[in-house]
Image 1 (tube, rainbow, N blue to C red):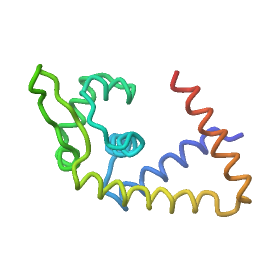
Image 2: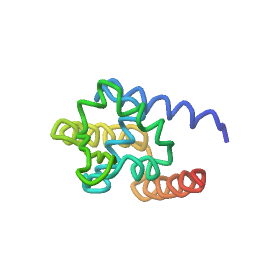
Image 3: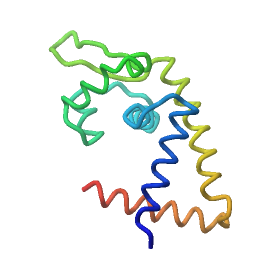
Length: 133
């Protein structure tokens, strides 16, 4: 197996997302996270933990001008915490991202039989989850 193929595929996916959606990797992760969690507001600490990044990294990512246009940050009335979720622009961008991801998936798996592509995606997801922990 040519392990560099994964890097080539990763670069292709990031390039397509950037060209079609104008998103970088951290913005993509943020949109996909909130999409998978029904856009429920989370404190910055909980969000950082859920994304498996440090609070300072999340804070830096949220300060990017493009990212600021996609999210709501609301201060708590009870303490100093801030909650984050997608705003309407972020939700619209999520729709575009999902369409782009579907197109990328179709490009990557157009030569696979349907069951083969589903099996491959399932196995890749299992590997990715193992690598995270």
